[in-house]
Image 1 (tube, rainbow, N blue to C red):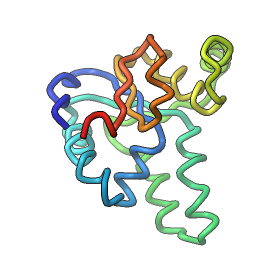
Image 2: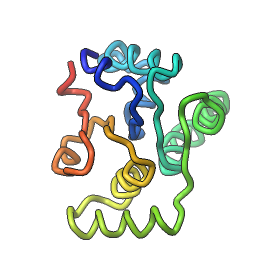
Image 3: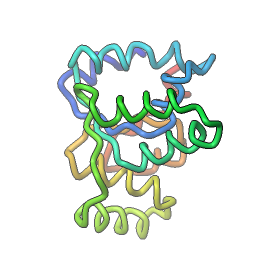
Length: 146
């Protein structure tokens, strides 16, 4: 991930997909994301996400009765250093509604973006090209970083 030096000292909004790709070792995306998550673990930058990520990461493990994987996601999202998971507060909800109204994003995406904006993130890591039209953050699409 060549952009890693640019992220140094920044706050990065983290969408759900990059976390799933990394934790579940997606064949294509895991190697691309390894440097990002190593930099995060080293504290070169910090990341923020929403409890929406907790919901989205837990659905399949719960459905498939993969208790250990569900616990791993909870551990990462609720206790990892340099990653903060924010609840959907009234302020984030208001901002998400404004984002959804202006850009037409689905509610989970609007909440993720609102969380990043609310926490003064400079970047947002995702694999959703539709989010590139959001001008308030530098949206980093994993496929474009390959």
